[in-house]
Length: 257
Image 1 (cartoon, rainbow, N blue to C red):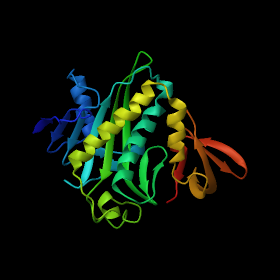
Image 2 (image 1 turned 120 degrees about the vertical axis):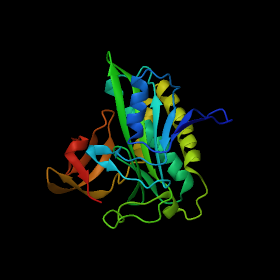
Image 3 (image 1 turned 180 degrees about the horizontal axis):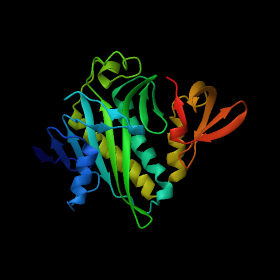
């Protein structure tokens, strides 16, 4: 069951609402493979996602009606695959803005694209790009955000939170949050179209989780103490360890929370 929902204000885009689907990213990819015409920023959202995906091959778990699970379509212009990390930047900034608007806790972006309140994760992003002829044909931005959960399984409760837990007086709906994310994605994507790369990267780095703080990380099975310096244009994490600066890819280093 799906509905096309349109809103009156100028920034709103098309939203397709599903009662249940395995993955909103996969559903959106299927629409595109069927040559279904979609406006940029169209969102696929579902009340129940049964096989959501996260970074490093993990599964995004959500409870029906308690989480925002949605995917958004972008058609990047002038963006080469070498600059695809900027899609991570604009999507992270968009979700950060929404979380910061609805909570008062310390909000940060944990590289590359987890959204944190304090030391707990509230949301995550998975981006899947279609590259053709050395160009990004489209980008599917899948977003999972804990909204109304009041409890989590004991094995993750120490590192996971929700908007409601951080703000018991939360007044919003999941549909409203999706429209807010659409608006923010459009705002930051327009900066990308204007090639404001340095400004976007600087803003992202300002919000980086544990930047300039001594913290523990796992590298090749070993624990190291390091300090995050920045994330570069290439999307690599630069840390300082024992007075040496080293860059890591996502698969090479893990935060210890």
